[in-house]
Image 1 (cartoon, helix red, strand yellow):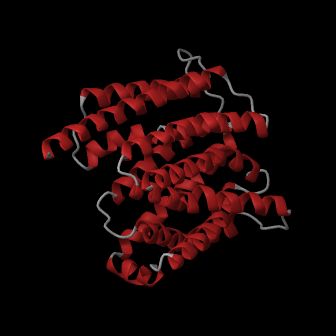
Image 2: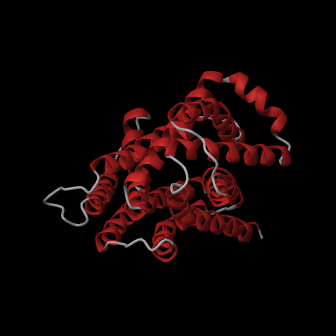
Amino acid sequence: MNERYALGYGMAAVLLWSTVATAFKITLEYFTPIQMVAAASVVSAIALTAIALWQGKLHLLGRTFVARPFYYLCLGLINPFIYYVVLFKAYELLPASQAQPLNYSWAITLTLMAAVFLGQKIRKQDWFACVLGYVGVIVIATKGDVLALQFDSPLGVALALLTTLLWALYWILNAKNQADPVLGVLLGFLLSLPFSIGLSLYTSTWQALPWQGWLAVSYVGLFEMGVTFVLWITALKLTQNTARISNLIFISPFISLMLLATIIGEEIHPSTLVGLVLIVCGLVIQQLKFKSKATTADSASR
């Protein structure tokens, strides 16, 4: 029964994540990237507070913060503040069909950064996966004209790739965090709010916005930053087969491209599909290696 629930939670998370690239583009029609971060962060903080209260963990929030205040401040500044400012700006400069697959390569960046910061060994399979993934990145960024290395928006591509560094850094810093994950993420949002709201007030004027804009940014806050994270964590906790649940994430970018083409009519360049397949193949190679190691460890323990 737990496996059925785990699969349900995992599929729900993946399907919701598949919609956010479309939601980003719609929301950016009404908000600047910085305004979008501020408004979505407020929605996420409210949602995560409600979830922590429902789980009976909210009373532990202060104790968790006092134990490592500077640590949680740093995490909050990286994600959601800096990460989403950079990500939303990349989406503003690039077609979502380019920005989303480029951002999706963060897991490959994590492999390299884990070797540098955590001392983890990179094996031959990892190097092959990294090369495959970054060839895919170049194919997408150049729209298939790899030799010319010309980009429609060099800044947009640079920002999309910067998000992979920021997201990987965030998870590396989280690697040894023993606190409850919901409380950890909630603290990040609460501590980053003064910065995102302050920057939005400094850089732009908040004018009357139509309800469609507020609905769109609320959707982003709930289903990119807030509730979906809890669904995914719940799925991983319930399952006895982490690899099977983790593999669900590979369908997300393809569903996302279909939604972008269908809902907002964005043209999907053939090179985007080719590059995305290369990136996903690189990620699958890493996952297969992980499964192999896990199987070996299981056998040894028996």
